[in-house]
Length: 477
Image 1: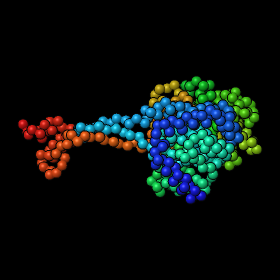
Image 2: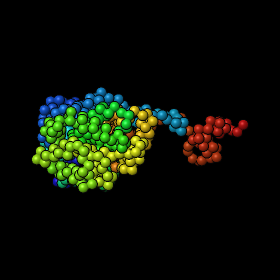
Image 3: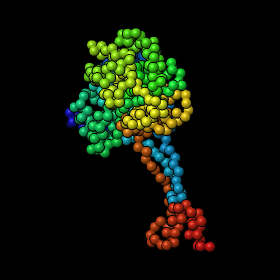
Image 4: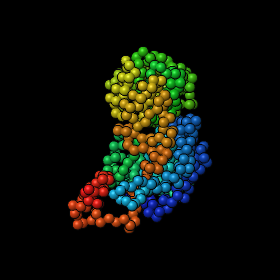
């Protein structure tokens, strides 16, 4: 297996060294191929996502297929400008000269994707990698086998197979890939595996992008439009893969006085969306597998929270479905408050004053996303200035990741590096510094023998001291 992985990387490196992936024309052809794949095989993609996650067609298109197409179309529109060297300022030290920053591809990229958005989170990084002119290996998640198999087939069919390859498999295959030397590794998944990726990359000094997760808080102030706030929280939590989303609200914070109103609003809107019997709803994704179902059950069965369920809690182990579940007043030392939930459970905790929510958030590891619902500008500014998170939305949830002009990535435990839009192109590029000078203007001052006069002039030049330069050149007046 290790030999096969080594041969795979060697072949991709040979393709990269040939220079074919560096051309504008090749990059455009591959971006168009991804759009064509998404357009022509839409039904196959939706079918695979339904098989793996029971994902509704609406979510499959809006959250995954559309996202990939949007990334490609932006890259096609902007690629020429992204590839153009960026002019940089020079200084008097190098006068006369010009400088620029040249974006060059890194080389051979490994993308290890995850299972919750297995189409989007496989192809979106690839769009960035090929836009920047790299060759790529994709390792899709074995937890979503239908999508993994489909990606392997379609990428081989639609894209340049000498430059973009797919390796299916589980831990042995991933381990063999991680033993190889890559020019960058892009990983989406858990902190636990992220540490393994980082340790493997360190052996080769390979840079990494880690898109991880964490407990994303949503703070709800008392002065909000409660119906709209409830709907948007539900959209980010239960209408996004039934909570199996890294930027989904993981827990809610509100005041003791307002909690019952928030809970009532959430319950009312949930029943409108998914009915009185949510397990029968076709608009609710299932839990990805029995391991994750059992993990979520363990969180609900914890004796510290089992009596805290105020809505939902229904489970169907046969079909791997868990209803939208709200828990109220859960203790800080409960299991559900000490690991990322990644499912349809939303604990609500309370504070005396809404401003106290900032201390609650900051007492934890930095999340991938943080959300605030308020009409108070002062609280909004304090929240943005005081809470460190990968990204934020005010009076909204999750939509920040759809804005391609914003970087998407974590901070601290929630990850490192970012992508989306031009940030994806930059993530897979090296920014090469280039200085140009002619043979004119060569000053003897920089060369030996070093004299006091030369030193005075150099000091004045480096300090930007115009009077000092004049005195050094023409003597003291």
